[in-house]
Image (cartoon, one colour):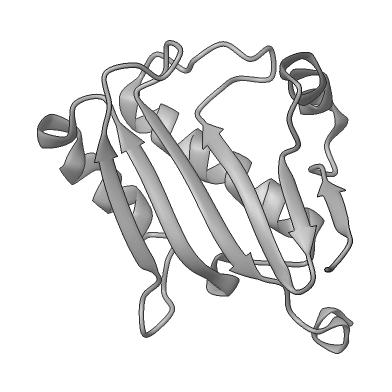
Length: 137
C-alpha cells in the first residue's frame, strides 16, 4: 500500500480552514492525487455571493491545490461537481470549465444536483495523476 501524503496549497491563508474542518486539501497516494471538494470561498472561508465568481474561485482554489503537488488541469482524470440548481447554473459552469480544460480526450465528469453545500452553490472535486518528477523540472 502506498503511503498517504497530505497536500496543502502553497498559500497558507487557507490552511486554517482545512485544520478547523478536519480534512486535507488533497491526499497523494502513489501517483494519484485525490482532491477534496473545492468551493468558491474567499480567504476567510465565506462564500463568494456572485455565482459566476464563486465558480471561478472554486476553479482557482482547485488549481492551487493541484499546483502544490505538481499537477495541472491536464493531469485530471476524473471530475465530480455538485450543483444546487443544475438547470439554471449549467451554462455558467460549462463556460468556466471550458476555459480551463483543454485535454483531449476530456476527463470523466459526473455532475450531481444537491440541495445543500454549506452556503455554497457549486463544488468541484477531482482525481489527478501526479506527473513524473522529471516533468516538473
